[in-house]
Structure formats: structure tokens, C-alpha cells
Length: 243
Image 1 (cartoon, helix red, strand yellow):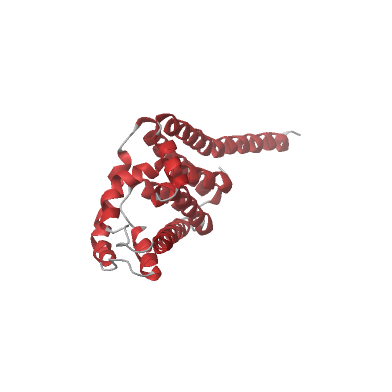
Image 2: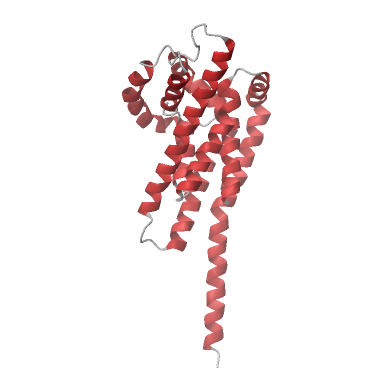
């Protein structure tokens, strides 16, 4: 899968999966005080924008860090084999998302345990910012909100990590965040329309089928390429052996 297709898949996961995130994290998000305590409408818009800038910023940083760690692990490993391994790992992550969208598979929740422990440390710091009375406080709260325990977020983070490229990893998480914006803001007419579209079973199955195609292509393409390379090498060797 090319980086462009990976980014497209990340946006699609965000669009399709944000109701999942709302279902799991809605209570925590409510605790964080998405309401701004009766401030003016203009302030609520400003704070909503700052929340989400902070959240996407955290996603982007996490993606870059995760991909950097994987890149460091790959130092000294045969690059062709390492590239195939990363592609297959990305395909498996996309396959997990496809299973969630198509069948409601709940396996993504299992990786929230680690995030829950981390949130036990971060959560109290986030609550100190309440009630939000300034744009910087909203930005900081959004940045902390990006660490909320959500299996889907962590699954996409795995995809960002196995890209093995910090820039691509950051881009994948940022693209995922963009996909979640319509639902996670929930304040505009467009956002409400998109959330209704997202909740339809047909929509989830359609996006799940796209994820399935992306997953299969991502995993099989490098393996087929390796097979072709071995075939060419064997043909070349036979040619050299022929007198």
C-alpha cells in the first residue's frame, strides 16, 4: 500500500469508527467538560476548535514517536524483508478494523487496558483545567484528551508505528483525527448529518469492505513482489549457467 492509500484508509477509519470512539469515550469526554460553562457561542466555537487542534496534535506526535521506535528496531535488519514485514503488519491492523466494522468484533477493546492505566495518571491533570475559561486551557485539555483510552485509536497507532517512517506515521494519525472531526465536534449541521450517515449499518459495512480490500492488498502485494523477484533471480541464474 502506498502512503497515499494508507492516509486514505486512516481517514476512512476515522469516519467509520468515531461512533465507536464516542461510545467508549463519551463518558470520559463528558467528565472532561466539553461544555464550557455557559460561555458565549463564539467562545464555545473557539474552545471546540482548540480542543480538536490539541487532540490532533497529540495524535500526530504519537504517530511520529511510534514510527520512530519501529524504525530504530529495524536498523540492521535486511531492508527488503523488513519492508515486507511492516506491510504485512499494516495489513493485519487494517484487517482488525475491517472485522470490527463488518461484524462488530470487540477485540479492539483488549488493547485499551494499557491506555486505561496511562489515563489514570493523565486524567487528574486534565481535570485541573476545568472549567475551561481560555483558549490555551482548551488547547491543553484537547492535547490531554488525545490520550483517552480507545481501542480504535491505538489500533490506528499500530498502523502508524509499522509504517516505519516518522513522517508517514504522523500523517496517518493526523488523517485519522481528521476523519473523527465531524462526530467529535458534534456542533455543526454537517457534523450531525455525518454522524447519522455513520450510524447506518450499510455505511459501516461499506467502509469495512474497503478496509478489507486495503488489508488484503497490503499483505499480498509485497509477497507477490518477492515471488516475482525470486523468479527473475532464478531465471537470471539459469541464463548465466547456460554455456
